[in-house]
Length: 253
Image (cartoon, rainbow, N blue to C red):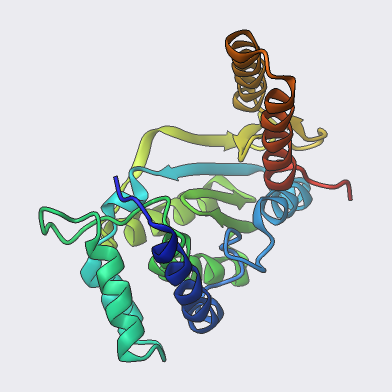
């Protein structure tokens, strides 16, 4: 596991900010985890608003996404931008950090630069799906990191969209998770980013979201039993609630 010293964190934040100014305009808006693209709120809102216009949905998760990304692909994508040589070398060093075996794949999933490079890596997929939406062959395509949703009006449209998705994923050396997926009617509903989304129904927390709440209660109870420190317990719960509400809460409308 990569460990960041405080000076290294400062350098990473500074360089990530500079790199983001160049790379962000190249990333389609359908990739919602990138800063200024709306985050979880935008992803869920876009899907919820289009559910009434779509009869079918496919939801996929890319398996081992960050650990499977090829360095040569990322470096070629970065070389096609306006980034200077020093920052391209910085990115190469960042990619090499966890690659002790010299395999040329993977990056630090928790690193500050990873979400941005991951977004760039899958930008060709986002653009291809955008063309299908513009051609009325899909109702909507949304991606949040490695979570993907396709909305379609007919089974034929959905099959064509899934085929195009598979082509791009394979071309990039990735694969879809065998279990974390759903293909069916929008009226059946599906889980996405902590929510249960279903056509004609209000948003609800997903089963996984409820499990997270249960884990919070159990961890808070154990922390109190072990230390009996109400102040620390309060800080722990407040941090959890802040993280939950800022990342998963979607305002009405």
